[in-house]
Image 1 (cartoon, rainbow, N blue to C red):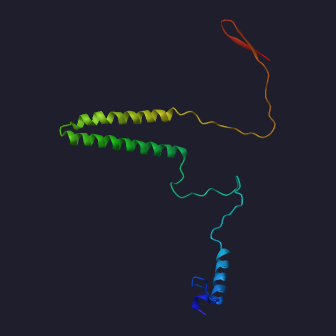
Image 2 (image 1 turned 90 degrees about the horizontal axis):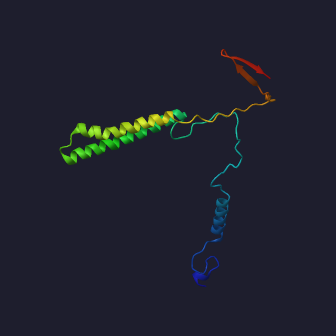
Image 3 (image 1 turned 30 degrees about the vertical axis):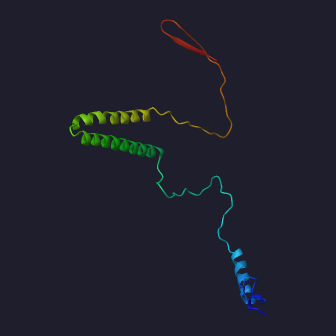
Length: 158
């Protein structure tokens, strides 16, 4: 018999012995049952007694601190752009007056910062919701007022 047609070889001349085949089958079965990932599907409670945990990234800040930091970043960016434009203009023109450039390019930045401060004060008040438990009493009486005379005297009648 030729070596390629023996029972332990396949038709292409590559094969495993019976012992090797059993070992490979055991390895494949073991790999099939080995977990590669785990997902916890238990529902997360909507609220509870557990305190919040700081997440990676920017540290937690109040809304006012967040607004202030965004305003500072925007002001710094605007100042850098205006200063860079003025520097390029003075370098390219070789005769630009630094004081005039400061006035021309600084005025819009000051205007933007002033408008930002004004807009910060003009924000609408936040919605406040009060939730009460227990019985509710509403007074539905109508009051009729009559004021007469030079010296006013008001009599409220229910």
